[in-house]
Length: 360
Ligand code: IPM
Ligand code: MG
View (cartoon, protein in one colour):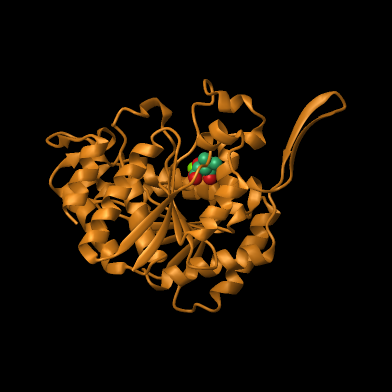
């Protein structure tokens, strides 16, 4: 199969982790007889440095010409990087939000799974982690607070800032359908997370999710308030299968879910639209504090590449092979610093990529 893949190395640890994911993809192509071609795309701080803006029309156009895009991470240290002296709409994060919106990537899938081998890195009490967990957060990605109207102004001499949380029924319905479609292929449970005891947008969310649920009688639907969900994720993560939630809640809960798996360096993600196209990226940030030191964990990016093989290219066997290689390396005791525990072998970013590629 011929696949055109866009690569956004981005900022911070981005170039290092994307390089390792590409290594694993290249090995997969050789092993299974595919041809992957790559186009480099600029986004975030890397784009600001060249063009003065975090996202250009050229990047959008080039991305649209690819079948899928694999991204590392964008952004820098907000206290020290000159990117953060620009107005908010010109900072690296605005580029990421812009490309998500431009490509209509409304469905963000973030799986959080506790690897048996990483149990020692799990920060939860042993009686809780013993049950294991395997959940998928379906985060709405192009609506809500991130994209509502916002402004900062002086009202009667007092500085006042406003952000708007708005969803319409179509936006809720299409993401809810995605969650149910995926639940059908998993353990058939959807937990919709909202704040319906306070927010109108959540009350509409709940109403539309209940309507969509009628078309999926085999899936069990439950509702949970977001504050309770934050608590349940550390108290009893095994209860969750698919968590369906709006943009900002999903941003927060997915960081929490990733940390209970042992490290945010393990959590992959796929951002999908109505076509087969997807933007695949680790859920973690650009970790500027360890950038360029060959210390970052490339596994979330490698697992994001596996999601790309599965969701955009329907290459399930190849995706399985990448996931199995990751598991094998963990079983053999190799660990980057973030997941290191006693008795394991420390590996650098490059070594981790080499080890995984060698097991494809
Ligand atoms: C994520 C990130 C982004 C988000 C930031 C970098 C804008 O935290 O992908 O979770 O909030 O969506
Ligand atoms: Mg986030």
